Image 1: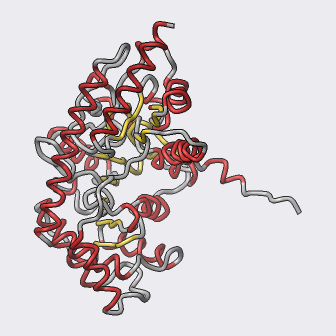
Image 2: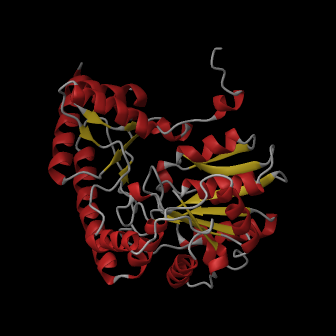
Length: 394
């Protein structure tokens, strides 16, 4: 019998970064050298103290099932960490530990959004937002993020998108793919809008520890938002723990309980020893020092990359304020962004992503992750610059 997939699979997207990575690995297997700027993963090792905490947890017997929402001690540690950072009261019953922070988005959509409900999300934005909204028969409503506003939302435009069918608004700051950061004014406006229209707000703050100036303002800290805001966060980016697969959500207790029920019906629980290592990550001064060193390196790389991009023909790039992505405008090259990304990989040996991998609002842009050593970034810039000089002349 021929395999026949359910039609719902046609509505499920992918992540362009993993597709480009696969092609880059194929080229490397053929003997080509590729500079990787496509994947959003810190190249730093997980701090030794966190690794040792995980090893110690395994030796202490943390190799079994845990409660679906997480080990009580770890939920308490996460609650205390979030409370300190955001200046709010958080109880362990509001915390759910998940094997990867995408689950927070998926579980929230499954628990709270009906088919036909409208969900507002950023465009360009993390592609899983649109993919999961469409997969669950909700109606995606993109809010444009424009270069001239440093990739922040136009607040009046956002307000105009809200209808009686709007159920959820997704925020991401610092933002993937643009590196844009919401201001306090932006966040306060969103909070008032959510209260006025009785909206849920998912705040994706996975990059909130990677900030190059200013302040991180969370919508959870705004008046009236604790009963309607859900925090999506995790350890992958801040502590170089992408492969450890530990994210967490902070949500009103009834939503947290629904997420826990969905954990029971999917992954059962996050790995026990990874959960215990999270306590070390969140509470240890050694972890904090490692994070600050990493952010300083990212800042240096950012400056190197943006300066180099702005010297290329047909390219202009704003300085990202957070995360570890540059989002240069390449319209003046006269080359469509998907074609340019493909040519840079196949002909110049530089793996980047087309801006449209993050939605229609990414037309005319590329995304470059500065998650490689400075020498690799310099080589990538040299290859890109040389290619564009020859290509634009031709």
